[in-house]
Image 1 (cartoon, rainbow, N blue to C red):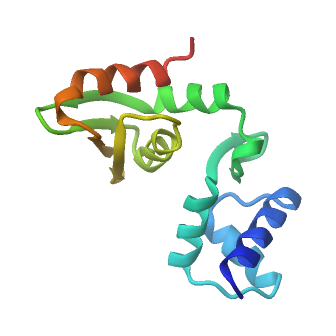
Image 2: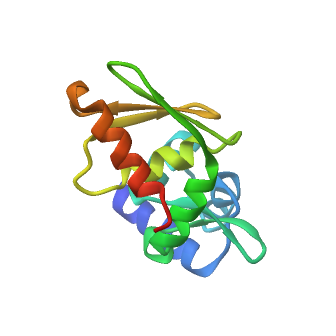
Length: 148
């Protein structure tokens, strides 16, 4: 099965059913006759912008168009504990298990001065597009995390 067909099937499943995590989504894909490796599914979720969001019945995977920006922004803001930097990089400390979600949120921002992020469990490395603008990037992150 090619990537476009597989990703379309993932979209269809998430529109019709609830999946609390990638393991649930993997099971739903298997039930639909689609065999996919966990690593491939993880890449697909990243490419599709799929995030975990708190719903009525707990957390579930959602597509970006289902995800009101201000709600996600508010959730991400609560998950960030601290932001620190040196001359070349920015470190964001998060609640346990939430660095990936915060990194995904930052990676999806448009016209960002952030080159990329690398997430651990509760620590996120933010790599600025230019190390000469660390303080501006920190301000940019703080502005995008505040609820307004």
